[in-house]
Length: 379
Ligand code: BGC
Image 1 (cartoon, rainbow, N blue to C red):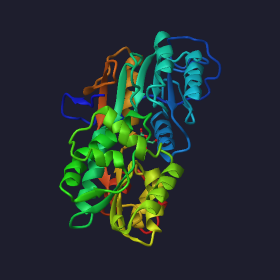
Image 2 (cartoon, protein in one colour):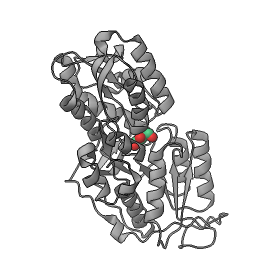
Image 3 (cartoon, rainbow, N blue to C red):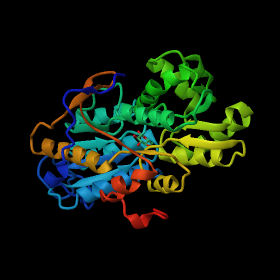
Image 4 (tube, rainbow, N blue to C red):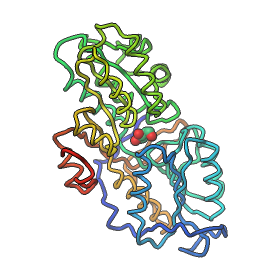
């Protein structure tokens, strides 16, 4: 799977200003009507998100609702609760309500192919949201953050903030192998960490598969798959916690002390941090994250998580809805590059990410109005 091909300098188009879309969940029952705005029972834009169990996706739901307040188009948001079967059912429900555009963040990238192909067959334009749907011709567009840059930022943070000297124990964790992003995040992290593993700055503490590849600057999809197979959290905090406990139980004293931990996102980072934070032989840990979840911002303020990668969901929502409105208005959406999904080149719009640590919580998250200061203690 190739990563994003960047065509022009990224312009974060503040589409909010032109968004005249809104959310109306009163569109019960479908009339299959493929035209018209707010006709009875008609939903113009169907949105399918992976799970309500992770704050990341609840954030997206909230931001969609915020952006959709004064819409002339109707939308409906459904959650798949970590099940590809439920996801397919959600898409069918929305097709029966006559949607013209489907915005979907798949639970499982390859498995979502069948659902979006059904939508395409019905004449619907499909926009993959945040996560790419792989190995299918069934998608038209992709809106995403720069996922390789997320991993690079995490890796670079560990390099810049880990202990001085050599042989610093490095614990690697990754997302779910069913999510293309997990590959991109790890690819980005590996790109910056690998030279520092090869020169002996870091010593991999918990993955024989990564250790065996330590002299390879670029990993193939299969090689990445091998490492992910060993250190995946499946995006699950409990799995992350259990793995961290197993790793620390097995680790010798040389693999403790001051350590660095690549944690793929905030939910898993907090779970792993809790384990490392209570091991008496771990004197200091530097740990990454992503999503700027509120609970992790509090962890960062409290010094329990080192950083997070902020992906401003307002921009992603604006991009996705901006594209949907263009499509509904018969215009061609603007894209800035493309992603190879294993089957086709998908025209894409990509957004940059920002590293958050204690010092810039206030300037990036509070002053920009993303969160309220009162939502945190000790800021
Ligand atoms: C998203 C992350 C999220 C993870 C787990 C990824 O595809 O890009 O923001 O933390 O899935 O849900």
